[in-house]
Image: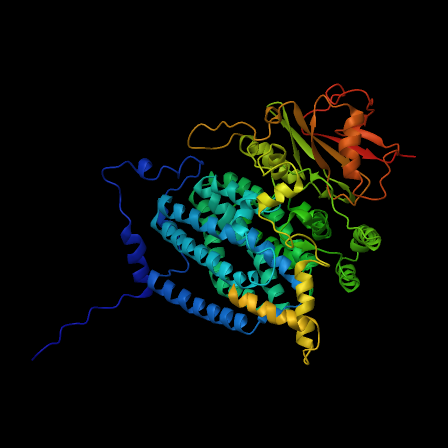
Length: 527
Length: 109
């Protein structure tokens, strides 16, 4: 009797994952543990058993690349189709893209930063589970950075403000807000970073940050952004699970970790919430077709899902809802109005334009914010319109006072009083520092040595580090070109948009712009 | 609470006054005009008189709102307290400090 040799047994997914992670770990023999992993103890976090880290996804590298390649294929075919079919002309309006200009400069570079830092964590965590999870997230973040750039680069051919986003991320005043958030996290220890990005950013705020962007894209005809959003969404849910796993792991390892983690939750909630203010104004003001108000989004994604859903679970470990969460809840009625007003004041120094909301849009704001819009904010728009009707345009003819921590112009009101700006200050080593809120002041007072180093754009301009003392010199240093900034009405994007649609409507070709259309088409081809 | 770090952690402020030479940063907050989304920041010589500071810095900025009247008798404040600036005195003599805040508003009637 002959026997055929046994086929090698195929490992189950779980066994493969275990082989891929656990079996690649070893005990150091000729190097001390502390020298191999020098970053895992100084924050005071105690880990007794790294093997208790459970990765709920157990994704292997081959499976991972297969999924991602499929998603990329789908995205890039949508991008091609959209570009070939002049899809940009079917957007709700050119001014919708102001939101995407902010996204490109504000969010895309953060993906890259996250990619870098998760790569660092994948070296420095002392357990194989978290190392491998960090490695996968690092690759995800790189992919997000690339797909976002490719998605939005299509618009760069036709619209202003997209052309210089990496330099602008490092230089432009409002982009210092998301940048400083990440700089703060990157310069913290590995566990604090995990709470800052893995938990606070990915878990508490991702839905607030990304879901509105993607539904906004879909409602406003931006198929590429919507597709990229879906492509990233499955990664995001994996990152959120990782963030939750991370916090539970830290809390379960040692009771002494609880107060440390609580302070990080407190700090990073408020830091992240302040960054989310940029999303708030995008939702309520920048979408020609609004989707849902910031207030509704905040109530659904934060109050319902996080405060009512997640925090009762964390209470079991002794974690309380973030300090200052009540102030964030109280601000939901005013946040977007205050922040868009800042942008309206300062869009002469930005890579996007702003404008007075149309009457129809103001009617929408009124019903979305029955208690605040008409009473506190509509009078400003009425006054801005009066100035515009006289041939002017209201801009803030100077530089604003910035919060030392969040770096947003100090615009937020006193809790309970929308008519008075909140001002806080602390003295440290004989120097005065200013803050927009109790939350930012508390963060500063915890670690003043860190925040005294903040690169505040206004102060840097005054120190002569930003191209020169005048606005045109600073704009040149920012890489902001004519047509990128200022008022939307009459801007390059607005003029082009109007012209292109007039051409489309003009089937006989009699319109004087028909000539220009041929010239434009040739110019685009050449480029 | 100090920063937890691997090594020593001691860095200077990135906006300390010496970086501005004989000048300093002064914030001006027009409290009852919501058109201005925040207080403004100016770089001003510590030896500048109040009259010059007002004419050369506050007036052009506040004039962003066409309704601004430079001759209007504002009630001034400094870091939350009252402030009665003498036109001929310098900012230093008036006790204005680096990165502190001067406020202006219509007098309460």
